[in-house]
Image (tube, rainbow, N blue to C red; front, side, top):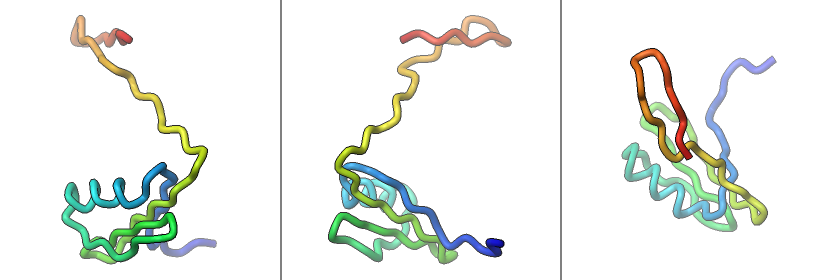
Length: 77
């Protein structure tokens, strides 16, 4: 049984580039960089780790959502 979670690891194409993005966004300290890995630590001790994966394919997100009525969403791609 898992009692605590210290952090999360994310696959990506460029670990340093993604870690630098989140470092600027969150203001967390970069604690690891090299050999295809990069990591950040939050002030509370949480760790975000980024691992380079050669075959990584980023997720596809909806390009635009148009709200035509308050209760209905229509996706336009």
